[in-house]
Length: 340
Image (cartoon, rainbow, N blue to C red):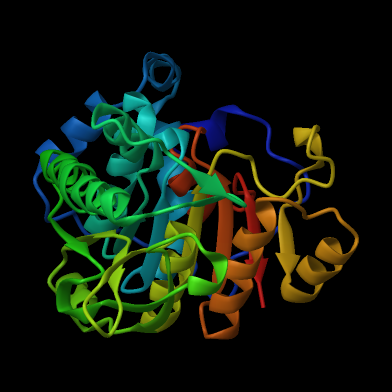
């Protein structure tokens, strides 16, 4: 479904990556999926009207070709772990949210172990306003006093987390909602030096509970609330938490969903998007001022997880329909891929 765009648009002539070491798809006949056909029907129902119109233009041969082109990636990533950080506009737009959920369910159905790590800033701000607490930020980080921390924990671990679990299960997947407190998944220290309250930096990840869940084909949905060693709840940046979780799981990929197309040489020109980078190039671009502002901590998060064994990190635009599948299952992708 999401690969329609790969078929109906003109990809760049030079692809940024190739699938090496993969079996040929020639003569391969995929086994019939064991999940119920209803999963496919529900995923189709989540498609936009534009996608539905594009689908009408495809012949049966087009559909088979799209599947065969994705097959090498599906074979390569089957049984591997992909950690997705979900946030930004994709959490606010119902159509985009439906696309993200169906992407995750599809990947799970073909044997890819997905872990969803989410933020929820806009929802937190909404609930703070309802109870008369002003949202305060300092250098881009939320100032989290005791009252704000209660709201953060309630919204992230409750309303946002469980709504995502429900959506995944409505789409035919299996999901379990967690916070970093559960199973001592995330331990952190309070960043007292920044004077921003109960905001933490991850010091330890215990992925045991996540491994148990993905082994049994569940999609863990993780709200980024951690505890320190005294049991105090701490608010954790979702990008950072996703990177640390990916490193602890030795994930194949970390995917950061953002509100930008990727790393741009000129932040005002999406045509300058860089398709692929390595760690050295990232550091050079930071030094040259090309990577700046809010993109720096995202890149640093990617570098940290890559240095700890994650195979690749991807920064993609969550505002683009089905951007997860487009990034993972096509040569061109839609964002910026970073490797070691």
